[in-house]
Image (cartoon, rainbow, N blue to C red; front, top):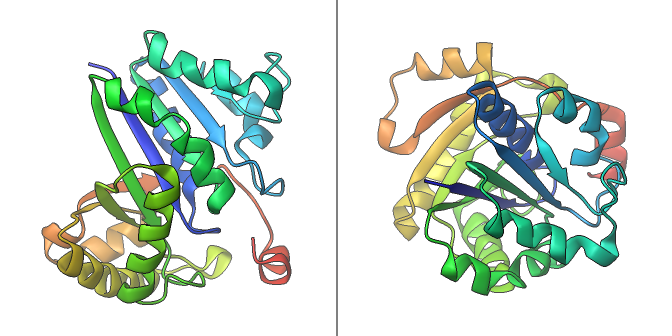
Length: 234
């Protein structure tokens, strides 16, 4: 059965890193995998920056800045439609963290409604990003994204980190905040993600699996500097 995973969330939450990891993991299992890059705003930190890696892993990419397969903004709609029409086993949508990105997803709501496979819409949360520091802020931002995207979030993902300063304590802080957001909304925590060593240390605490979900260790494929992160806020 075809599976689609839609990643939404705030700027800097780590959607693209998770999208690449999900795609690489699936491709290494022999699954026909497609990634749809709907981030039309953030040119600094994009899926298309890893074209060579995706080609190496035999992962197909649709992106507004990916010229390798002749995909341009003018024919993005037809290219995205292939996600629903072709025989992919996993399709990952990486949605920009603003209204424009969510609206880009919303235009395909009828295709999603007609989709007969498994659909998961994950809200990627990094509690160290603005508008994500508390359960109330997470819920408010999620509601705004859902309205534009015309999709309901099916699960939270705890991807709390401070980039090169990351530690297991970041995931612990994220756990406490996202647990409250899950409790208030009834939306489950689907996954906790992070670099292998930090994820292992966090899981060793023995926290409630209901609020950790399935762990996904992440390889670091996307690179950006802490200086640029703090200067640009991306």
